[in-house]
Amino acid sequence: MYKRLLENLAKEALLDTPVVLIVGPRRSGKTTLVNQIEKTNRTYVTLDDPAALEGALADPTGFIRSLGVATIDEVQRAPELLLAIKRSVDENYGPGRFLLTGSANVMTFPQVADSLAGRIETLRLLPLAQAEILGTKPTFLNRLFIGKLGSVGDAIIADELIRAVLLGGFPEAISRNSETRRQTWGRAWLESVISRDLRDMAQVGKMNDLPKFMSLLAEYSGKLINYSQLGAAIGASHKTGQRYLNLLEQLFIVSMLSPWHTNRIKRIVKTPKLHFIDSGLLAATKGILFDKVQKDRTQFGSLLENFVLSEILKLISVSEMHLNPYHFREQQKREVDIVLERNDGMVAGIEVKASATVRASDFSGLKTLAAACGDRFAYGVVLYDSADFVPFGERFGAAPISVLWE
Image (cartoon, rainbow, N blue to C red; front, side, top):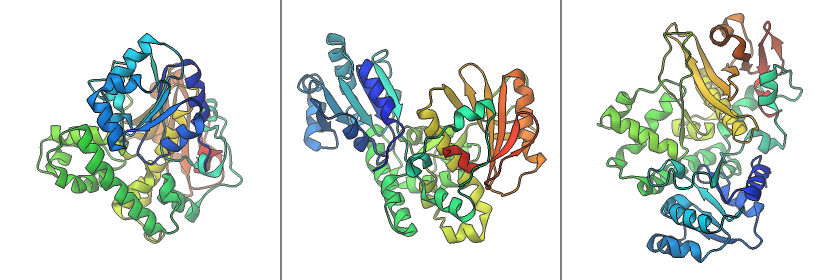
């Protein structure tokens, strides 16, 4: 069983917050985590149980009153419960009363978005990070912002890196013995989530077209989003394409990276960039296997960028720093794959390269970003397929991808 980086943070939240909500994709380990956190004197209910769901929908207030201190799994299936939880907390404001999980980001639902303001802490549990798989304690984000990255003695490189990227982080996929069985699991997971959870969340009129839509999204991974093209793929408008994409993001299937911008550069591309939440899921959707990547690495770049972003999002979710992730691209096509802005305004840039060599030209986007930030720029790094750290002047360097979990 894996030790989750989020466990201590969740335990701390339960000591001073009435409602703690852990959100993330299905089968990412939320139920296992909440059962590890606290069982004593806590009623456990899952809304995947038809009887429990029927009771919650029929009488939300009575359902909550009957529970006392409780863990409620898959709360997105009955979002009306959050209003009943609000009333219960207002009557008895004590820490740790409700521990909730959700396989959709219920706090974005219009009917509940403001219902628990000031009463809830939301934590995000994504699929396993490499640090969790390997049992390490990552310090990458702190070292990035002080510019103290270095070489890695036992780095994951070359074929081993390809395998890690294709594996992804879903615990059940990792437990399967063969690559084809893992990808079979990934495709079945995607079909299940779309057919069940998407129907629960919204009225989607073209469910039969969603497999085609997902295949197109996989081709868009790592690229700027074109909502018109996405909608046209299923014979719909750009607004429908945008709506479907937003729903898939709420279900933690994809992640849209917003553009970073500043008044110092007038001609900045202001279009979001699309990624999958898990590189293994992306590989399964595209049908990319190890032998194919080993022989032809042309498709590895987008998979690797997706993998690195996923790792960084997992680190952000447990970091004491308040960081927002973006991408950067200006009209001259100088770009940075990932931009991290801290709440004090400091900025770090991360460029991802699938090659084992780095050249000075690989820093052009990072240097443009640095010039735009001025004194706010902390550090710029190119993460690449190597074990060695190479400095490229003040505030720039090339570092192994394995620094993410060291």
